[in-house]
Image 1: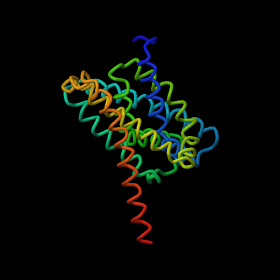
Image 2: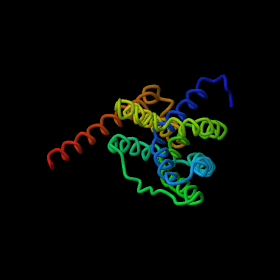
Image 3: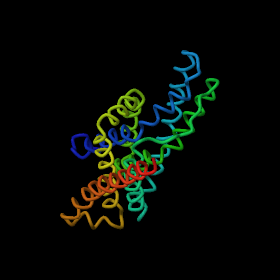
Length: 228
């Protein structure tokens, strides 16, 4: 791990941005799960629920990072991440996570951990791809980004509603990461030796994700308006 390498810092920045973009819903889960708790229990619920979710996420992401070293797995993961990025734009108006308020501290912790586990596929896959198999970078990125997510995801969610282009920017980053995952796949690594494809695949997927996601989103909005 060379901290003087620009690629290290760009990967770390990608992990931070990906977590912020994809973890906005986690703040909603935490707020709802601890809604009916006493103030003291609410703080404990947020801390222990988030702590448990972070440990599980690090473990899952480490496993994903190792699996991505198997031929074709990273390429398939890149295609799946492309779909997730399009879905992020398509479902920009929000989703119902069916999260309920907990009646006691232990229930709140269980709800936060379980809900985070269900919603972590996109985070795990994207972060593992951005880390490029570097477990130290992966854990460092997650360790830094989780506190930011806890305190900043609600703010980011508000900013995304105010400036929708931020969602497109985040989706584009996921598309770019997906392209890099394809290039880093051990079977398709030869593509990265072709200069044109080395840039065309990541940037092409980034642009494609933004275009397709927004087209589908506008089509859904048009159908909704026609059905009113």
